[in-house]
Length: 188
Image (tube, rainbow, N blue to C red):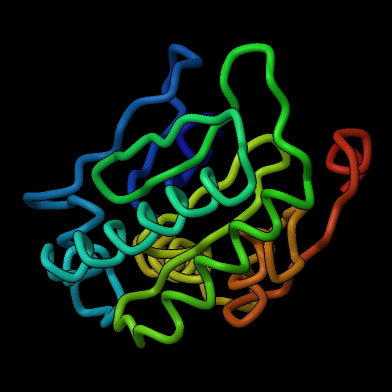
């Protein structure tokens, strides 16, 4: 049963599997049996993304984060990763929810107006805001394909189905349950 527990990180950018040692281990991406190779026939699979397009999305998002930092006088730091960029509060600081929502809405508007071709997710994480190349729709679709599970046998459980949340995109690929607390997650 442990080997049937998977976690997708970065919306759909890295896949982990629970091992017999109760530790999470990265699932091989490339080569025979690699999840990226096994799902390349899916048009939106991360293995098909153009690196220049990824860079363009992240550059635009980072510029929006910079503008928001300045405009809203936020005490925060921008972090750039391989396929994501985020805004996190400085130590002992808190970013108001409204400031995070405003930042996410700015970025969503910027990327939609730029007509980016890759899927992306700009979301308010509650304490921080992030933009990932890819989204949970892609992640669920890749998992369905990789594990051979049809959409009618898939259930996505999440807590952020609003437009500034990161679970919204999954609604288009499988049934979803919107939870509001850890207790409700246990119940579901």
